Length: 252
Image (cartoon, rainbow, N blue to C red; front, side, top):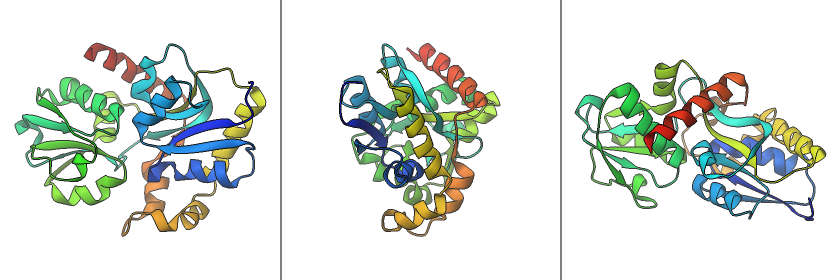
């Protein structure tokens, strides 16, 4: 690779801070730049060649002409994920309109797959503006993702965890984001990145202490990272990801 600086884009959510910690604190990566972005921007930067590697929402994979998974890690779930939710003022069967969070296309696609194949509902879809999901957008239900959900969940009487709903539909885990490149990375560089991510995952308590000033107040962040997020990009998750990509192809 003919560039001095290894450019990385990662999502700036609580569930990615072990990755960020590993990249920044393990000492395994040299001469890199790490950008922290919302999921859609991670994907855009990778697609446009602004970065060499990105942790991108899997819903953006079909936009890439070619790509390669470059690490053994992802942002996944094998049970409730807690931060990708359908929040509603009405029970599922009564929902006629759903507002869609601006921040992540993957969650938008997931809720549409679940509506069609699992819940058997056909709501009106309303695209929310940036930041609107954190307020009251005036719709019956919203899809909300990321750290904002910790505060939002108390404002809605009905809450449906999208990872848990996917697992009920498919009996497979779900992958929200994966480490991807569109370039040819050297094997040593891939190994160093993989080891840096592994370092972060193996030092979650230290990660939380290091980032304590940016953690959501009143939340059990250790339990969330250890029990709700599953980081290993193993074969069951890859199988679940392939099925999800097939499902979203049918949406178009």
